[in-house]
Image (cartoon, rainbow, N blue to C red; front, side, top):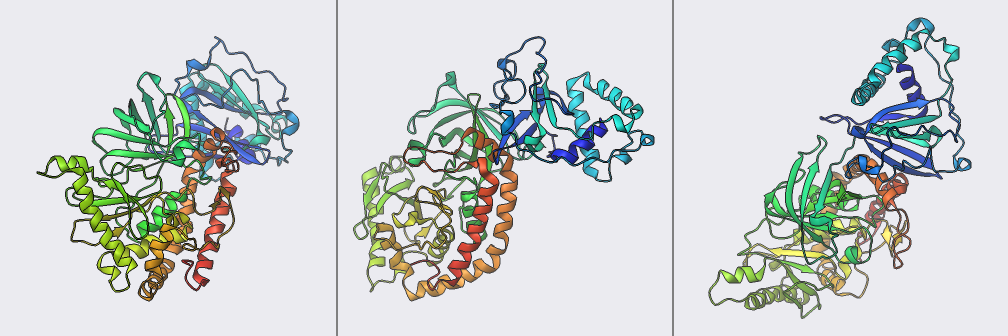
Length: 578
């Protein structure tokens, strides 16, 4: 068996991701038509993994005995790519790319298969041990491997095939699957991201972003995060265009009491962001990272997860805090504070259009009805009028030269907020969309933030991927542009903004690409699996959305775009603002 593992390393670059609880999955990446396709198989459903020499492509696999069906593996572990009815691979043989497999130097006969003859690289010994562990789970295979080792000791080297071209995987139920090594890019044991399992009551679908459904949630953290035992949760849809326009849906989670998920601050509400149009699954994460490095308060966190709902894999998601006044997000006294959302969807209960810039202003938090219940002679509408007048005083200051703008809104928060959106080329501030600002109490200054919603940014432009990195921020005749131009076109703002830009270049930018590399290395397996579930296409309105099936090239494009974007901003006379 050791010789087999040695040969495997030379031909398909076997990789191992071990966690504190050991490997949990075998992930096989096939190179087909220039794309990497992912197959993820839970190790507890596997019996053995074997690499076989020169198996003809049309060789039938043995029938399982006794016969088994897909339901014999628990519904939350059977991979969607496993088809027990297809012997071998379903890809036609003439579509398999031709590759040259190098000859392998075999051990001398006198070496007797000792570990020292496998190679000096520690990885060989480690993976050998893990292969034995997988065989132990299968029961009798550990004995078979011992016999194989003995056979290897006696068999002359010239009788061992010089190369291996097939990988067999057999399940504990007796099913077997074979892939030509020519199609295998790499195999990976384990996963770097947790999996969230949600089972909705009666197996119901989640069809509303208003009405919650009762469900049970559990999390397998695979040693990276704490597991969560089955826990009652309510779930509904969330978002605007992401809910209505795309097949991969985002969700809102609500618990009856505060709970910590994947290391986040305890809270009752969380969001599962689908990132359907983000072919790198990293745009929000990069924006949050920049904001965190600038020490912007209440910035969200990005936790990559895999999601399974009612036993069906849904792909790669981002778990993050629900933005609002709560312990996990903007942690303020809701009896004293106000948080506004400015967005043309205009779909909250308490809202108004501002007088000067015609901004669609909505109360994000607190719930004015709940606040009014605890106060005498106060109604939700009277609270809205009170805070509306306060907002209008701030807006009037922006629109009036004789009034000092910075007596009403915090300049430092505006600078950091605009800088993050400018680096990421998130032009939604022009409308504006998904824009938040808050006030701690009536006598404090307004502050911008938290930053939010960056899927329509970076390389995504006009509904598709784009290499254009020279987009300026506030150049269109729109309410958001008018609002920000009243601040950014002042000498006082530009002087302070340029100083902050120098801080970004010296303290944030040197580590940004490293963070991107680390984050995408963490999510790569999950992203490629996601690409199998959500291939390239999109919707009639957005037909050219790229898929994470081309994850590696997508990440390279984003990395290149970021470098060019920052260099261009640094050379622009107004740093890309207008």
